[in-house]
Image (cartoon, rainbow, N blue to C red):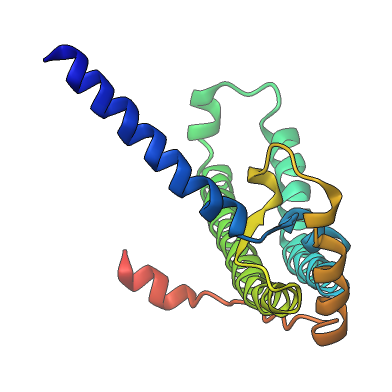
Length: 196
């Protein structure tokens, strides 16, 4: 009985290989290095240039408050230098200045965190638009090549250069989407506070 099961199993494996091998070879596969498309295409370069500009703009918005807080911190450090905690607490004017500074610092930190989330969401939204445009360009190349399967280059261990269509996808994307719309996301501070 054991020999019969082994023979049937071997026959089943042989038949599966005999059927699967021609099917696998009948599939046309192409490979796209999506990271290189993002890095080297005009649209990807445009996207990152715009995101960087928005980030610099956000930093410029935060800079005056940050500079004022640093200056105030230095002034307060000078005032409390050499004083004990009890001496500081005995000076109501100094305590009020320290508390006011602390509140402004917390507000600035919250603004900085919000700007960071806004920039991250701005980039994510732009990357989603880019991904859709890259998919359209890849589909155009896939159809022109008559390919059945498209693999992301990062997931491919080894492939011949004839199946790598990254340059073709970049050329198609450069033609159809040389720029990518990037819209700055603004998180409403009041809505955010109400949610908490």
